Image (tube, rainbow, N blue to C red; front, side, top):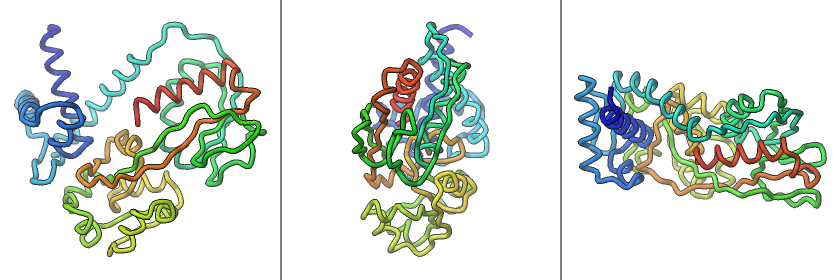
Length: 294
């Protein structure tokens, strides 16, 4: 294929990927600065070129057809390749050594794990020891760096950066094909199955209000990994970090119900280790990943 043809295919593929992630054509168009009519034409052209329907169009969003699910899995690999190319660094220093890192179950499962393959591929002589816990560390004395949900207040700590983790509702493709998209918070509470993380209600009053009025809370867990697993298995709709949910090819973001829920987190390091080349390399890599996935 020539350059022009490949550019057209790439445009159609990435329009399809983003629409599948967002679950609505209008929301995808707005988020990417496009006219809804232009995005609709591009998606229709993609379907015509593949000679099959990829999206079921509903009044409140879209869902993937069986063909759409297969194409989405393939297209997601292209999304990953583009990210790797954008972050390619020709000067791969021969950094080696061990990093001791602390993080929470949620941040470890949701973000850190996805950052590590590229980092360890780039620095094959590095070993990372990861300590995951539901409670923040009492001190960073026994670790080189940490990713924490609570603002640190240690004399021996340097705050590297602060982020806001945005949360949204996600459901599996199979769940949405059976039960459809929730049309409103009331519809979510009355007609949909919900998977809940047991500490969410104590963090966000808005989520507590939703859960208090929900009729079908089918499962509760204290594990972020289990929350993702239950949602992917179609047990119910779950509240997840948006960047985490969008990376899961089996999950669809119910973006039409924007709960405006977020939580801050910090990257910190011990003052004696922040300028260590190996620590700095991991910090910079994680920050780049967060910019891409948040």
